[in-house]
Length: 193
Image (cartoon, rainbow, N blue to C red; front, side, top):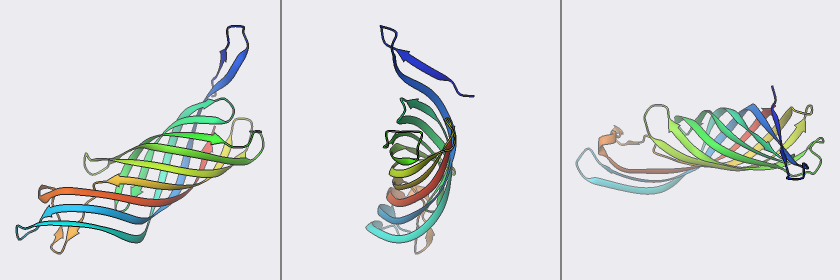
């Protein structure tokens, strides 16, 4: 079901169509860099303070649903949520994404760009992190109301993820600071109606 709303100017002329949209998105992302600052009490009672950066290849999956509005023919504003991996953690992201179709003719395949920002809710605890994506993609219109997007994005996330020292996992009561900034590359496919 698609509900289309048309905004009218005082003279009765249509300004632009506002159409409600929904869809799903699947993706794979790989975390390639984590910059962290960890301050904690060691088992021996001394305070340890480490700042570093790690290069890695850690793959995760992502499944999202989205609901939003087409504001005119070329811009969409949608709310995204679902289930995603972040290094060794599992999170529930909630973000707002603005997508702009670059080509003028929306009935033909073409390029798009998007900007996404929001927060991640941890699945094992009540901690909240922040996330953002900037990306591009290629859109294939399947019908007048259905579109298939192939996406590529850079994602950065802030998270308070668990870590270990030489004695094993560090319990939360010994942690004073645990800042982790993870950089990822994401590829995905989105189906929108």
